[in-house]
Structures are given as structure tokens and as C-alpha cells.
Length: 79
Ligand SMILES: [Ca+2]
Ligand SMILES: [Ca+2]
Image 1 (cartoon, rainbow, N blue to C red):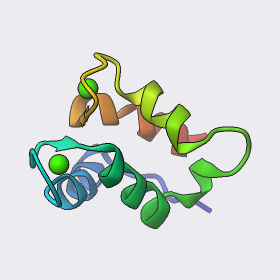
Image 2 (cartoon, rainbow, N blue to C red; image 1 turned 90 degrees about the vertical axis):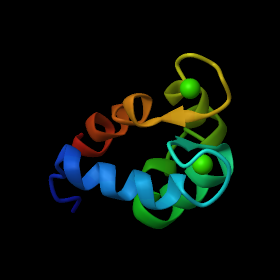
Image 3 (cartoon, rainbow, N blue to C red; image 1 turned 60 degrees about the vertical axis):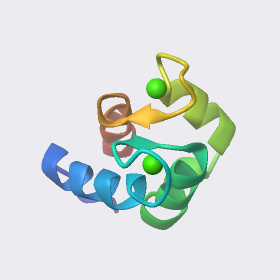
């Protein structure tokens, strides 16, 4: 059901949510939660929780997700 999404479309979504609070180029956990719940709710079905997803995406462990880190989601929704 998920249409293939380009990196550009993903960037638009990222920027929309990343700008809600704090650094506009980084997703906080709150912002990620909103984004996933609204745009990709299917990612939270099954065993992975938002906490798991956030930890997985935040590769450098700074507590926020940059667009570079966020792009991993593209592979997930393509599955
Ligand atoms: Ca932000
Ligand atoms: Ca990070």
C-alpha cells in the first residue's frame, strides 16, 4: 500500500515535522513520534516501538535525528 517515495518527498516531510520545535534541521523524539504516527503508522505495527525506532535512527546518539539519519526510514517503508 505504501507508494514508493523519493528522497525529495521524504525531505519535505522531514522538514515539515523537524521545524515544529527546537532545531529545525533535527527531529526530536516528539517530532519523530508525530511524523511516524501521521505519515508512516505502519512502521509502528509489529514488535518495534517508537523508542526502538528512535534509537535505531539516532546513529550518533545526540538525542535528535538529522535528515541523514532519517533516510534509513526510506528502506523500511520500501519493504
Ligand atoms: Ca526540531
Ligand atoms: Ca542524531
